[in-house]
Length: 368
Ligand SMILES: [Ca+2]
Ligand SMILES: [Ca+2]
Image 1 (cartoon, rainbow, N blue to C red):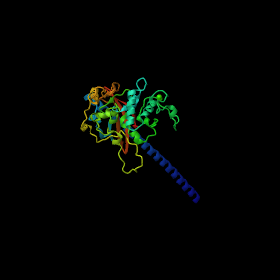
Image 2: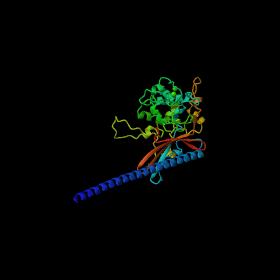
Image 3: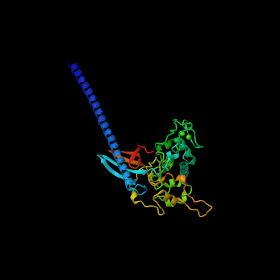
Image 4: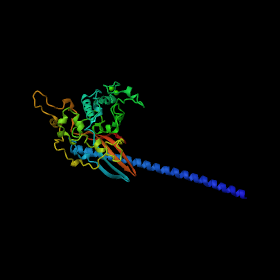
């Protein structure tokens, strides 16, 4: 009898163990299902908040266009950041718009026929030189987007260079979609973060044929327009006399880290972080600033130096370098910080403003 009782007890224990295992597995699956539902819910909230932020930015840019269609400049309302706003249950949104039209557009290094645009090539070479890069690296930028496989100049690079990389890659030979591609381009790929960050406030990758808004161009971009621009910079630079002082520049967004060892390379900073305390409406113009400019004629007038000697020509921006100058912006980068529960996600969108609509050209979790 005792043997039978022992066997029954063992059987009962076995059944209990199996039941406990099944229950544990069911609870585990249930928890996984709950977590999955929560994750999906967070993703949906994130997406809805992103759409809400984009719609808000689109409305602000169209409103600006309807009230002030001819000038975009430093004191404009659209440059006011969106403060942290609860937009959904447990979701907080903040963000800001950065101008991209005051920057040199990499895709305009080629003209509509795919030929090198000499005006833009000169500007880029000037910009690179002013930031202590080899100005000939402009050829590597052109080779990255031009259709052919023939390297330009001594610093150009096509597939024969890129295929030797580990891992190998090919030149896209199409317009640049995102500034992140710069990290792959010969002559730039081996630069450290701080060097590349110096470029971000002055360059953009937007569709070909972009206008250059001189009212929002940085000190360095204005300098790139003609050799004599340094002599008129006090009058035309909206950001004051310091280089790289435009909002979103590496110098204004890279917070110093007092605890880092002196030889520790700084982490990559975000050139499109929002300065939530910025108040563009209360912007104080530099003392000698004669802008914002109302027309290209005003800008040319302010940047021309009349010669005192009849034998010497006036110093003036070349005719063919005036064609794309503008007072308004067509391209913007929207930075959104979305807090869902205990997670914060940063998302970017490139917006194109036309006469009656603002299109979203590109969106991603990384700006560069
Ligand atoms: Ca090429
Ligand atoms: Ca080429």
